[in-house]
Image (cartoon, rainbow, N blue to C red):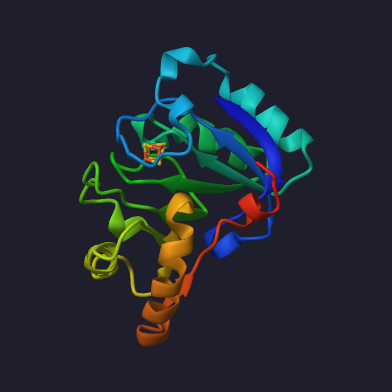
Length: 193
Ligand code: SF4
């Protein structure tokens, strides 16, 4: 769908320069999705993985974040093989809707209520990032925290349109449950993509 060099705004690598590759196509259907243009894969051009890698390498960045859409719709093996051959770090952002393919240096697992993740996915997460849209999402987040590896980093992130209401609840929740960390979408505060 698009690719660009920017600053990772969320989660464990927040504030780090990263080249984003946003793959078109998603069948998860989050009602609050902020990239609905990504849903229809056919609306976006097909780009060869060598060309994607060339662009990422030319940016001068060290980290490539593959996001979507829902990237696990595709077999990502050839893409990650090319990126790694070019000496780039491969990071994935996914709802885990389908089994993981490819070689990843970092997997951010962000499950969505609208489509259950593949059962194999939580065990592969380096980072669990749960979007908090309403109060019941805390309990839902805890269910996933039981199934990720012990060293997985845990983040709670307010859904952007509900930020005002959810931030105070998240602050209190993290104070009461200190294994969690707050993630804010700082790229939105900085007005960058
Ligand atoms: S998984 Fe991501 S791209 Fe797909 S609907 Fe949800 S927020 Fe949007």
